Amino acid sequence: MSLVRLNIKGISYSQTQNGAYALILSEVDGDRKLPIVIGAFEAQSIAIALEKEIKPPRPLTHDLFKNFSDRFDIVVKQVIIHKLVDGVFYSSLICERDKIEEIIDARTSDAIALALRFNAPIFTYKNILDKAGIYLKVNPKKDDEDEDNILIDEMVAEEIESRSEEGLQVKTLDELNKLLEKAVADEDYEAAARIRDEISKRN
Image 1 (cartoon, rainbow, N blue to C red):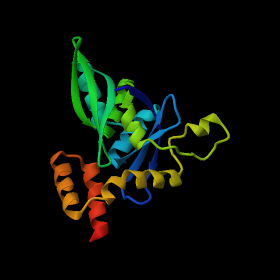
Image 2 (image 1 turned 90 degrees about the horizontal axis):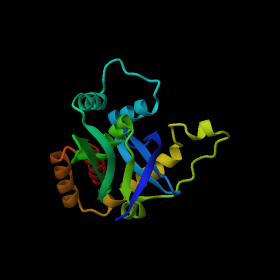
Image 3 (image 1 turned 180 degrees about the horizontal axis):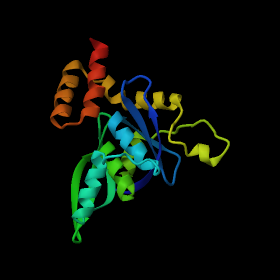
Image 4 (image 1 turned 135 degrees about the vertical axis):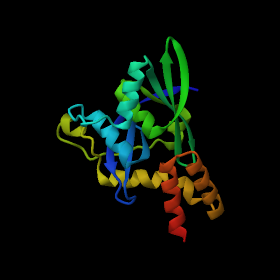
């Protein structure tokens, strides 16, 4: 299965989901975007890593992980978004220590926050991009500096959110409650929040 490299295109605050953000990953050799809804903490951590000039007074959790890894000679070589189930993306960190590779399961938002700190490339499989990739027309900017701005148009964010919730809308309440239990058990709180919101709409 072929891998497709992704870059971070931007982050936008969600207008409909309180405390949620939309992260847009862009296909390196193509026009498709991969939208992912993430939590506020992870969005802040990713934004800080993107803006090199911002230095928090104390290490954030992802900075702590990076410092810990540096101390023990562990390197994150790449991040792979390897699975998409019911609108939830699953990722792996490919790590190396003493020339031995290990694969570690991670939430996609955490994996991307760490990829930025390790300057590690981000990949997904072609079939995931075929399934979840979308073509977005971001508002044209006059210069390149504006085009690379972290914030993406609010209309784009709304389109992203509608795509991320498609898988939940066809589920029954029983199925949603089971998914909610599993998301909480897996500590996937981003997915749990989206499922809870869908359940609330129906009650």
